[in-house]
Length: 330
Ligand code: XMP
Image (cartoon, helix red, strand yellow):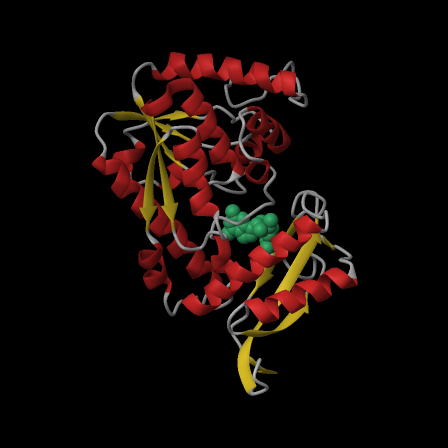
């Protein structure tokens, strides 16, 4: 039997009871696989790694060592929430690495989108590998691989997850622990809910690995990155208040790398960044349609962004479906 193939007999996990049964089964399987050894996990705070972390903490407690790398491209409040949930609430063994300056220094002046992605991905591996080498006696690597990752890597569409990129000395050192590798996304969310993870972590919208880095168009600067992060937080807050969270597939802001003229609070001419709002609906990200956001909500968000976000005096709404535009701007 190929352990990377979902058996036809496996039921779709679509009730809390089935999720609980899966959790019990996996706890036993993880304990049997790992024994008294240690497991290392890169914990981004995304749905998949969060669910794996919660499962592993439940199964083996402090034998799990999670590493959260803050690369400075996460959304507002995310690193804090990872620490709160996994260290403070679940009592997990969490190493928090503040790598913000390191990433932003490496990215300074780099404007090509694919080069930016490579730098972010490569530096992530470097930071994680450095942490891994500091630890003794770790024999396992936990991974949030899910079934679509396996299907896609079999089709050759993408190499799945971190291990592919790890340097050889580490790749050969670890056996993998991938407890959700046969689950689809909705099943992972259901399991996460039953594990007690917060709703905003389990029901998160898709978020690219390079994070806000691809929404701060062109060469990333700290001022525009702050503008992306603050405007994104306002859009998320207002969408949630309007009952649109969970209804709209993906929504966020982009800050382009050009300035436009405006008028500041004292009535003087300003020369500031625009913020672009994007809100799309999709089934699998291969195509997307535009959400018809109520005009009053767009007005409210515009008023808040222009008054609360430093260096921004203009807000636009992107009406472009995919195709012709991609969901992200770069
Ligand atoms: P595009 O922009 O290609 O995005 O229409 C499709 C979906 O993929 C996400 N996305 C990424 N996810 N790494 C990721 O993990 C990336 O480099 C990346 N680029 C885009 C995007 O947010 C959307 O959901």
